[in-house]
Image (tube, rainbow, N blue to C red; front, top):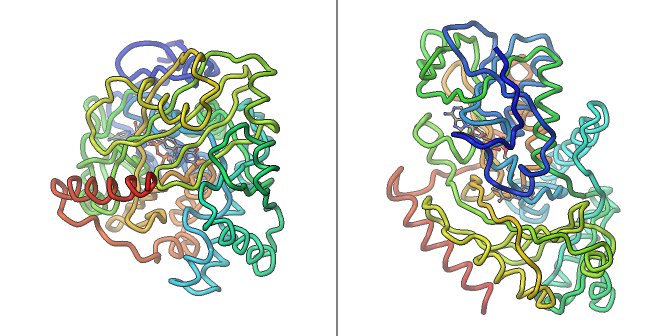
Length: 435
Ligand SMILES: Cc1cc2nc3c(=O)[nH]c(=O)nc-3n(C[C@H](O)[C@H](O)[C@H](O)COP(=O)(O)OP(=O)(O)OC[C@H]3O[C@@H](n4cnc5c(N)ncnc54)[C@H](O)[C@@H]3O)c2cc1C
């Protein structure tokens, strides 16, 4: 039974009322799981990671059932800034210092593959997601300029990556109409897109490849042995393997890996359409922009000439009462000239971070795999995560194991205490942005 509705429709489990939901490609509601079914692989979570895993597995001929608690793309994947960044969340110098040059180069190559994969998916499946090139790092402190320039040189010399270009203050001021920055670094290998429409396009591609997708099908428990049975309120999937892709919403579902990630909430607004001229006066070349602050300001234009601006994060699961007012303050600190701009949308999303900000990949018992904790850098890397999950399930786990070998620590304090400890730490770093 497939009811027809748009993915933006109201009702329990509907998408956050975001600019993305308002401009989503109409998508049929996938039926919830009823009764017991068999699969080779059960994927838990219908965000980028789960969708990519389902698509790669279905292409390899596996019988795949994907269970999404709400709607496809309901989580971080349908709410994020849409910014495609190069590399891992940590820079190569950080990786070299801890893991050695060789491993850093392999991790960089995987991240480059992630961007290529993303581009190929968009092209091959003709996903209309407003994909545009260009990602601009906006540098806020003079003392950081030399470091970013040195890193660009290092990437060119040792990694063969030549798509970074430094902008001095006047060039940066021409690129972005703000006094907040002392310099910039343009990455022509990065870009931006409409993330919810990417998720919906990936879901179509996965279904076309043979995967079965269920929405409104929250997994309430997994009996792992002797072979997994993944249970929802109305049915169950008996599967040889399980890919856990619930990310910041994993909660208590799998205690063996839950303490490696911490959910945090980030907030986004979109202005009313500003008109082409006023919008282009803000960001001349239609690139996306992210500032070098601990709590990152990130923003870009939409095709209908709005400014879509993310800024400010909170560490409480409670809903933010006035997202528009909260983020608007950050936006006006960058663009005071937008004081008269109406804010049409404001929404929040939960992402998962790890202590070292590298994603956490792990085996879960004998039949389970997980990939999560992309730490705000998942638009491209999740595509690769899905591919590596599929490779591992198919028996070629070298690349999955490289990711799984990254040294991670559980957040201290256990399930209940880890949150207050994190809040104290995060607030300290956020305070440093203002000093
Ligand atoms: C506000 C915000 C801005 C961001 N901006 C950027 C950006 O500009 N660039 C960037 O690279 N990254 C960004 N990120 C991070 C990026 O969105 C994530 O890394 C990425 O979307 C993670 O995808 P995922 O599939 O792993 O998780 P999600 O998209 O969160 O998907 C997890 C899914 O699992 C489902 N689920 C959870 N539990 C269950 C269950 N028990 N049963 C069934 N289903 C379940 C959820 O409903 C959800 O749909 C941002 C994140 C947020 C929140």
